[in-house]
Image (cartoon, rainbow, N blue to C red; front, side, top):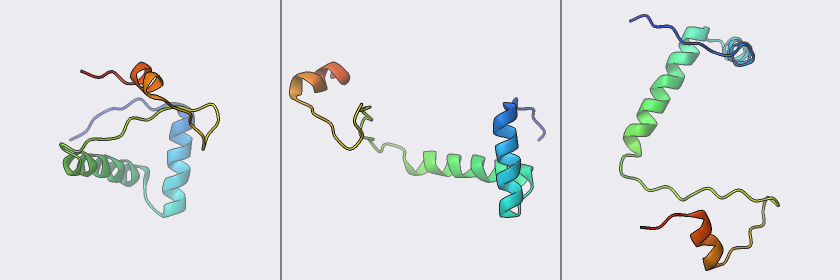
Length: 75
């Protein structure tokens, strides 16, 4: 099936460069990425992921229960 996807110029250039570097066509690289994404979604069904919390100081995060309840909504 043929489809059209709008890709920003900078991303397109990066994809094309990566495809050439790895010896794939742009089409092959995009299809590999789509297949990997679909497989990852199938493998992760029902899997819970830990929330990502941004830190101003990577590698260090000072949290207490009050801060956790501010960041994450609990039922």
